[in-house]
Image (tube, rainbow, N blue to C red; front, side, top):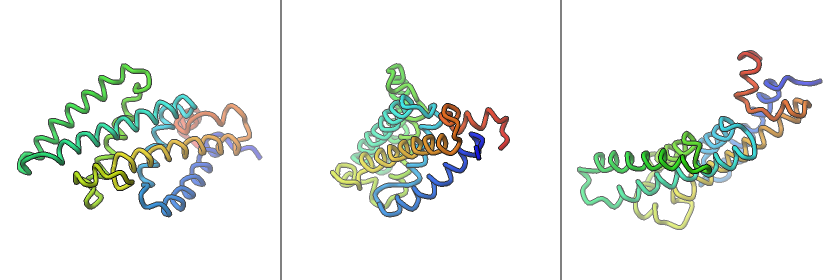
Length: 190
């Protein structure tokens, strides 16, 4: 029985999501929420090999930019000015992210902001993560390692999702479309 590309994609997404939650639960230094963001970035970037590469580079670039902002803020002199300093440095980093999009490998600006936001989510939520000790640690406790790695795991989840959807659809080329494209081709209906 052939499944429509949307149904095949939905079934593949369900399987990959469930398997990734179970697998990533075994690795506390990796974050399933960040992996899902990486997966979404891959999908909205076109769900192709080129999309995987460009999305991954942009995700990592955004994470590195956020880490640099965090380093600057964590080494600040006065706690009273932390909010203002964060605002200024985050503004400069955002300018750099958008300006860097002229480079072909950094053209996917939303992916860079996903990486940036994911890094700050981790830094804001993980106890002790927003300290200079953690930020310079050569370990997965450091956001510059754990967040991009989690995001890149998500890219591989997206690739697995696309491949499994293609297999389930048994339709060669149609299964290559991203979830967004499969949904759009059906007019939003299953």
